[in-house]
Amino acid sequence: MSRQISIAVIDYGMGNLHSVAKALEHADSRAEVKVTADKQVIASADRVLLPGVGAMRDCMGEMRRLDLVDTIKQAAASKPFLGICIGMQALMTHSEENGGVDCLNIIPGNVERFANDLSDPTASGDEHLKIPHMGWNQVHQQIKHPLWQNIPQNQRFYFVHSYFVVPQSPDPVAGSTVYGHPLCVALAADNIFATQFHPEKSADAGLQLFHNFINWDGSYDSSSCS
Image 1 (cartoon, rainbow, N blue to C red):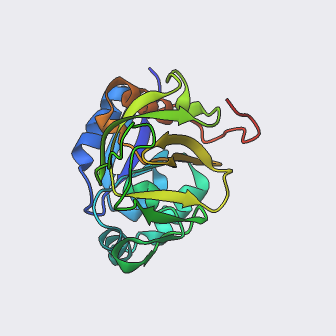
Image 2: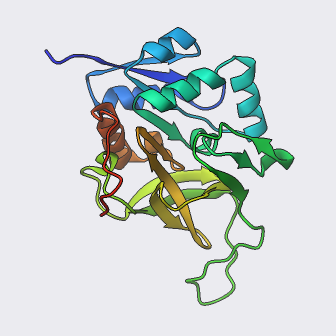
């Protein structure tokens, strides 16, 4: 029998952790998922997932209140690590949300809000786009990465967000989409992968990404591209 792989889903009170945990378990029978804020459990897990929905000030505030910041940074530096939605945004240096919030500064860059007058450049008229960006959108894989394995190019994933990440360098951009303008929706840096979209809400493609994460050893060749 193959070895179980322990996955700590960090519980800092933000997001539908039950649906993430169930999707991970459904994606691979070897997944042993623990939804936890216990620092020792997070430190000992084989994989770590940082989820999240809501406002950045609340998210960072809860991470600090629970004394999880250093634990998250250590996990992101040492083992396969996946950030989802605001869990991706929290990896950046600073967010415009709530008048400005300092984030974890694991990947240099900022989090910016969509403009209120965002329009569809492909439309024949002046069609304004709704904020938040909500629903299914294509994701273009910018690099070859183990987490994209068996996921077709330009696959559709499910989004709910009003803010987006702007990395300081283009190097970590692993996936992009277009909503009014091109934007980064997936990041890859060493043993870290992060998505703006929600794999747990993205049907078979999301389950495949979770399966890939469970089976990923944290390595990837940053010199290769798709």
